[in-house]
Length: 261
Image (cartoon, rainbow, N blue to C red; front, side, top):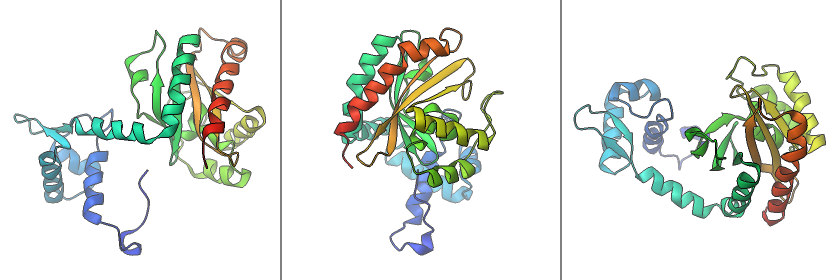
């Protein structure tokens, strides 16, 4: 997440660059192509500023522009930056063999999720044989409070810190069964601390159960988790606890000793 530092309080802050990043962040799974007017609406920038910034990003190779429709979309340069990120993140290299092994072993989608602001971000994903296209794409963000990975990471933080996060972080209702009771989530996260794992059902996707175990640093606090998603209809809680949970915990615990503070 971008640092929330007001421009006037940081002399090194470049406002024009920040505005350009707002253009790039306007694109997501719900907005894969945007017109100039749509960019203005999504970024809140003046039309002239949005036009100059989008054109500059196009000329610099960051955005493709359809010559007929004049609509913008992300370019291949985004993949090049993602490639650089993967090579620069030692956790991804450590976790990937474990993710592949778990996915084959469990025939389920297995993810490496990192805490990113008040969301969790899937930085690596290995789908099971029945996995859908969406489950193969890295970069998906979910509210931390509604995800097993987010809850289990929060469970490793000091009690006062995590309770404040639960009280203030966003909690959108993603399904009819999303838990909107923050007091209840406090208790669920407390249980995750005691149990060493977190489990969710129907929170972000109906008929889906998420199971996650934390990857802890030397200080005992986690910033990432191994997470697995399975069909609620096909996997009972008892079956998950017997056939999935031990392997998720073992994988997370095997990575943790190699993480440096």
